[in-house]
Amino acid sequence: MVSEQTRKFVRQRAKYLCEYCHSPEYLSPDRFTIDHIMPQSLGGSDELDNFRIFNLLVNMIKSHAEAQKRRGLL
Image (cartoon, rainbow, N blue to C red):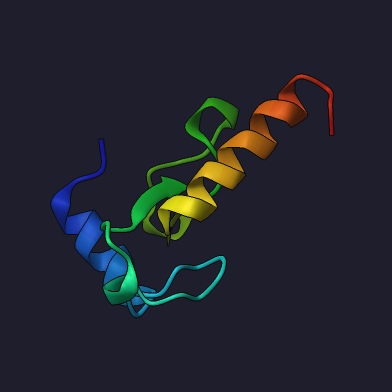
């Protein structure tokens, strides 16, 4: 679970823009997602530089691509 303090810092650092598609958070119906760049399951840390924000659509696409990669489909 990402702390509210970390969430706030990462959102401000990104200037409230999706760090993948650069869409502004204020245009999104949902608050942007914060996630690890390098997943903890692969040795990623909870350091601030290992977090990024992105919108819901990007999150869904990213999650789908990662699942297919794990299955050997990509």
